[in-house]
Amino acid sequence: MENHEKISITTKNLASGNCQVKFFIEDEAKPQYGYLLVNGPKPVGEIIDEIKQRMERRKNASLNMNPFFPVQPMAEDHNFYLYSA
Image (tube, rainbow, N blue to C red; front, side, top):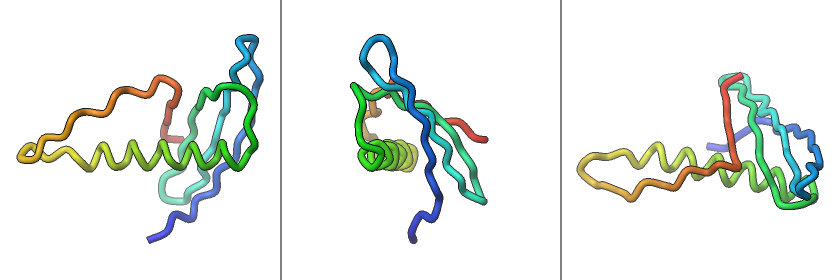
């Protein structure tokens, strides 16, 4: 099963040298938006790949909630925030 959502981003350079990325995931079933903090400016393709990887990690972490097979909890990612639109 493939993901057919479209990700659009806007970036803002911060005084710290980091870059704040606001992204929108245009999915008919579950539209979402969020923020990602990256170290310095990056190409758009790299940013979108990083968003996809972090979303996949979050999805996998939520699937691993089996009480009979405990998995170490994933550390919170304070540079990635995701919300329902």
